[in-house]
Image 1 (cartoon, one colour):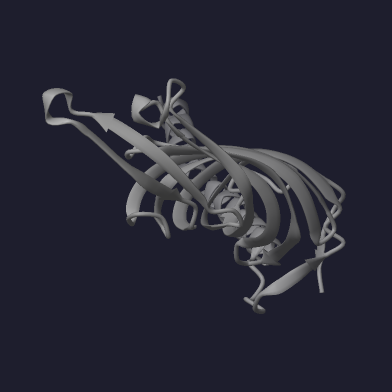
Image 2 (spheres, rainbow, N blue to C red):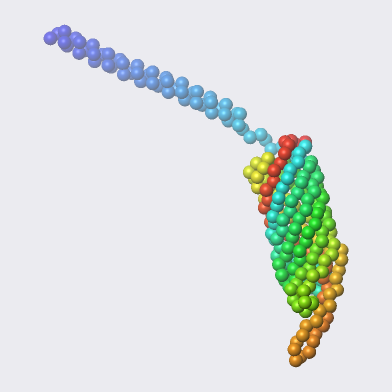
Length: 240
């Protein structure tokens, strides 16, 4: 009986001593794991901390790129018989090398009351700026055709064409990556017709007689457009 009581006391003492020891071991392991995790987190923060902002820089050696772009916007045409607003859509393709670009484009306007269709090419400069947007500016030469299906201008309607100088100032950026992807932006578009047209027309009023006059076409259009494109860049760029 005494032997059993002694064994029970020993077991109780062992349990009483073992539980605190186990708790201390678990606590030590937890503190070690926490300290290791904190150290790893500190190293990650130090390694991935953002660098302080150092201003805007022109990227050096931007390489070359190929791009396609569509745009849509509003324009005002003045210089003919009246000043009118037009909606317009267009597209262009471009090749950029370094800070220079060359390309071609097509543009059409809505019918209000005449429309234009423009096809031409351009050359310009391209300025990719680090920590900001990319800027492009170009000048070109295009053929602009004024169209109106109204039969008062003749059986085929109005169809006159002439040369125009084109100017573009654009701001854009690639939000996905620097190698390839979508390009979003906006552009200011200015077209100056080098040829002005005087087109006679005749309108039959039936029993009231015939009315005839002359319409003038050609002038200056100024527009703003939103741009959406896709381009592929080759060659890495760095800042100055």
